[in-house]
Image (tube, rainbow, N blue to C red; front, side, top):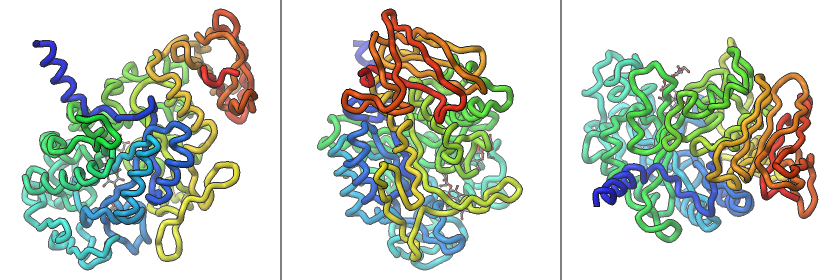
Length: 512
Ligand code: AAO
């Protein structure tokens, strides 16, 4: 009986840590700034067939529309109301996306902006994505409705009304983050409005939420809001499934607020992961790939069951948020493929792949002056569709990292090795390493400036395997390198440091 109660309690508190992936899938892709219509099509034509577990979408709330700078991507982090009407599309298009993605087993995770509304300088009028009227100066948002009573002004004690010092917990949580009007989430009324917004989307079939700016909200307030959430829609999910919650908390250490304050509420973004792996693959600060032998908790990361991991995100790929120059993005494509490959091969955390658009970077004194630029757009500011080229890449400025063969194939690798332990580690005491996942997959990296030429124990059944990085298995053939695994699991690997992609990966489903 006692055991049953304990198990019950554990299930309750860890319920929101479960991404509810279907068909044994394992990875999330962030389709940053994509239109709902394009996401629906992508689920059907690519993400479902290739085994992606879910999509993180951009904030679907009605948001401010800014002219200066012109339609920045970050206008969507300034809510005007909870109408599902945004730069990505209408409520009907949102519903259609959720239904069509769910029908092919791909989950939708919503970026929920619930800490604040628009910035103080947002003005008055109806320059919002649905044309709802608001007045930022008076804190009036009649489409919710919120009034000045629903904001934290009186609680914030800094002279500016904004966060001035991240080592003061009360400031961080009660004052304005970059002058965004800070909602009073301690109020029952505000909690109710926020929960109703999230429940509307749960009822439509979303599987969970990336909750924005959690450091700036009290864990107790979030606990109350999450406690009001419905179970997932049983058309697609088992009954009694709690929504997946992953909370954005930037914690690189050294601040008053720690990500651990949020663990009992859901998972948390592990920002150390991409920052540290960036240093490792760039070989900065004396880092070497072989030091990642104990990658994960051994590197002082949060425990596996609490972490969502990523190489870059929509902020730190353009100098916002945290991580700095070590972050490896699509702009460094060769390193990016390796780092994402490493993440997807490694068992730690729930993995999220970034899918970006290109913009005109323009650095002055190391800062990108165009870090604000929105997605590929038409003259009137509407977002362009994502066209797919004959070679399966994307056009019109959409990068589609998730469609790069090496990355797609590593998402499949992660599914194939799901649940298998990290095994058969090898390194050369420098930047050549290899590891397996039980007897189902094996990966070898050469990030040194010389060739790798070595025979290793892979743990795999004997046979000929197709490398899924230089090519892939097609029918009975292989378009890439072939790897022969002998009796006892031993195989010879040769990777030149000048190879287009200096890594090799094989798994039991790439066996010829
Ligand atoms: C825009 C304008 C502002 C204007 C505002 C209102 O840029 O000038 O005042 O509108 O009119 C996004 C954009 C913002 C944009 C905002 C609203 O990034 O530029 O403001 O939309 O349109 C903090 C938060 C974190 C947040 C991050 C950007 O803690 O939650 O800032 N991320 C989310 C979203 C993001 C979004 C928002 C929140 C707001 O992902 O897209 O903003 O909805 C330290 C702290 C971090 C802090 C960073 C940056 O990090 O630890 O908590 O993140 O500073 O302020 C080292 C340290 C690291 C440190 C970092 C940077 O790496 O180790 O800890 O340096 O100093």
